[in-house]
Image (cartoon, rainbow, N blue to C red; front, top):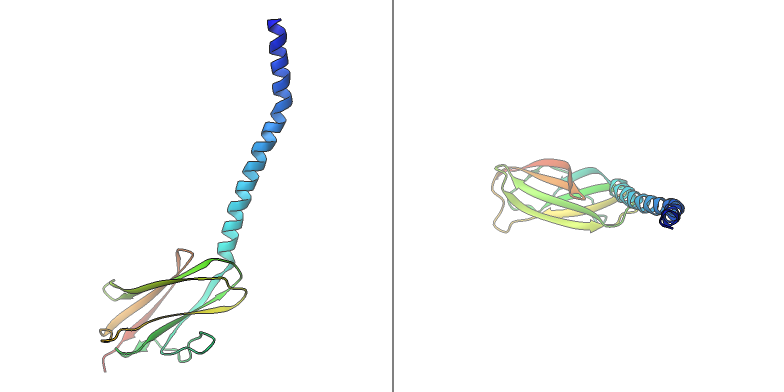
Length: 153
């Protein structure tokens, strides 16, 4: 009797094993698929360029590209992207030459093809003369840095 129940348990185990392996495999496949989808989505949008200037048009693109500004200028950055995705995060960190963060902001975009996103900084009492840079990140990863200068008149 004891020997018979072991055979029954063994037989049931052998029959159930393919079902267990299949369920684990499907769960693993779903997890891998989800990770691949996330990686693909974040790589579907690329920053193609960063333009700086003193004004932007209705299309959010810099009208007069420059890398030299006066202390009281509004400094615009247009980030040009290409690709399609939902919930893409663009972030700018504006820094003075000593590494001090002047400003930072982020926007969630959902582009479908080429797109332009505008960021800007301004300071009522004017920016100190010196060298600056803006670091652009896409979904948390820095992708481009653009240097510029503020010159006193």
